[in-house]
Image (cartoon, rainbow, N blue to C red; front, side):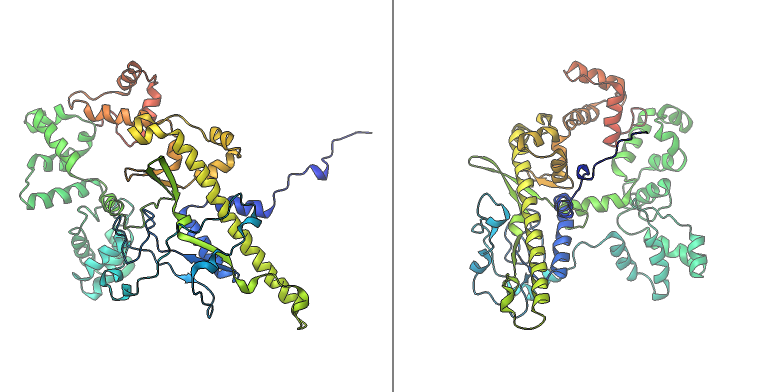
Length: 485
């Protein structure tokens, strides 16, 4: 008789659906949480959400169409009570029995400073301006004023086939065949597209992109004949820094070739679409901008942590969905109705509980990280101390996976106004990368530091570093090798 081990059923690992849902909500980014709240409102009539008009970038209360603190336009925040239900004051909203969900303290609703919606918004022309337009939408709007309606489909095809760098990924012949139009019309529309901002948009390769920009600069009086020659005939060799050979063929001093190459590198943009995204990010008006979840501010007693979500949302279970004894329902369908009411009420309470758990966990983690990285906040990136999620989990008596979910896709607004991923607080390489960036920026054009030399300099400064590690960090920062620089 052969004996084989058989797992006992009571030893099987079981993960409840509620635990999965709670962990999922903790992992969500700010945008994903907003979508989850909106979706839950649609699906669950028992959940009531009051959304305060706060700036999603600096956390300040907004009473008009625009934040007076940072200049960003307000997001639409609407009161979502059931139709016909009125509230004479905000006191009724504070009747949420948070204690029954295991809170160690009553939920504080006194510091929200809820303001009424500004009724003048509908008369403010600035509030009607559509925000967050994509580059494709802007290009098509400009082309619409330059083209006839017959050429509009060609413009849509060209703009729709621009890649993330701003290059055209389809041949003109393909566009002409697809739309059954003459090739000359496609070329004409492309020529107009290539005159628009950002300069270089619609190019089909790097050489054309740089030439478009240089030609536009030449038309403005900044003529660079040598740079034009280098781009047209020596671009590949220029990337390999073969300045001496190029100078010999062109019969010009090598220093002039180096100067022209430096002009190309610093003045022209090989990825025109990226420059548009950078402008959007800097103005904090585009969809590419990452919204902060945590605000770090310097107060009288030190650095303070504040969650924008806590200021923005207030939740409650609708009064019509409060539990009622079954004997109060006299109609025959009372039992089914009570089950319906209880189901949605329990679901709303559970959703609110998950949100509260998310806020408590995120705030605890952020407060510990801020306290640990106090010197970094005071003096800068060079003073970022090594920290791991396992250490945070141990100090807070949490699971390491919980800390990972709490820090994933979350961003903090530093006291200096810089937006930083919370995960970067755990990246011990940032200080070394900052030193590398400084060393490379200070190197002489005639002598670029190799990765071996950079490793030796770092080691001499008290930061032992292998060459392959320097190469890894340099590539992560998007810096070319010494030969390519």
